[in-house]
Length: 195
Image (cartoon, rainbow, N blue to C red; front, side, top):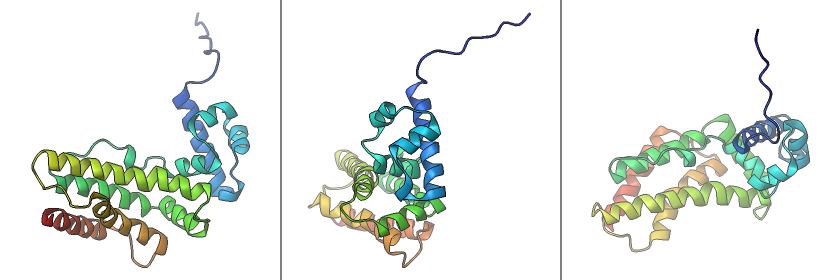
């Protein structure tokens, strides 16, 4: 005789609730667009309470960006190998993410957004600045190991490495593809070794 296993009581685990919320937010974004995504709408569709949503995201724009960037390479395992190999892994991951339909959706949404909007700020913090900081860490490790000398101006160097990705994403004049990523890393390494 089989016994029914009682369902656990209380709130679902935070990660499960987060995944449900991201899935619901992505569905709303794809069906209705950025303008229709609200915390209330995601709560209703996902069954996740508003307090839980606000524990993970400050506002609907941050939630929208998180839904679009789910699986973004910033969350990937730390790259390994030489600085060239590690930068290549990171840049290829970012370029590959933005070459997808989801990535193009982000580009279109950002191109139409006010530069001071919450969505633009969320993208800047969650994607651009986090990618830059990961690059800064890779360069610092290479300097510490003696692989390269410290760049004269680290911030300018990082801007020169990461800005072309977002320029192509937003302007759309040339493709985001593997050849671009590899060429960008080759130029970045020439810049870093020249330092």
